Image (tube, rainbow, N blue to C red; front, side, top):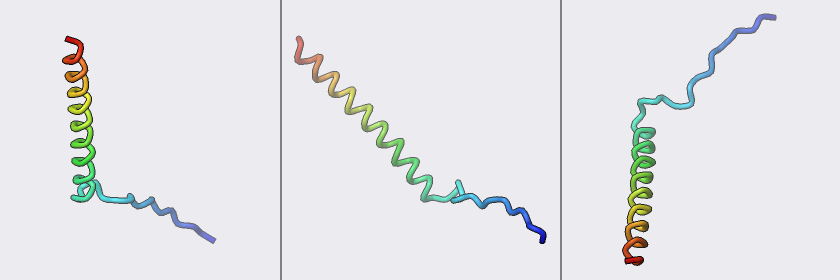
Length: 49
């Protein structure tokens, strides 16, 4: 009885546009969150004047 070794196939090709869209969405969400935090800090510091 002989067994053959097969290398595991990747789950998805990294050049697929779906993955690029997901990465772009995550980056956009991160930037939006940072902008929101910055606006909240700006608002709070404006109240203390």
